[in-house]
Image (cartoon, rainbow, N blue to C red; front, side):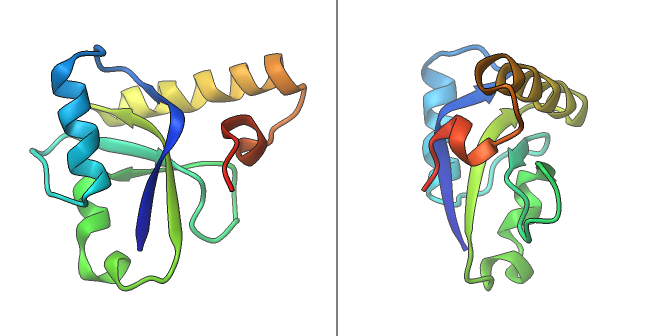
Length: 108
C-alpha cells in the first residue's frame, strides 16, 4: 500500500516541529506511539471517508494491498478524527456545494 498525505491535511494537532516529524513518520510508514488516527478516502469507494488507527494500517493485511491510501486528516483521538470528518464535510459544502473529496483535496 502506498500512503500519500494530501496537501492541506486536516489536523487537531498544533502545527509545530513535532507535527512535521510525525508527518514524515507517517509518509515513511513508520510506527508511532498509540493514539494516532487518520482520516482517509475509503479503501473500496464504499463511502465518503474512513477513520483508522494509524498503526492498524501497518499490519500485513493492509501493507499487501496494491492501493493508494490518501490521508486527508490526522488526529490524536478517534473523537478528534470524527470532528475532522465533520469539518471537512462542512468546508467541502462551503467551497464546492457538494461532497467531492478528490476534487476538494485535488487528489490524483
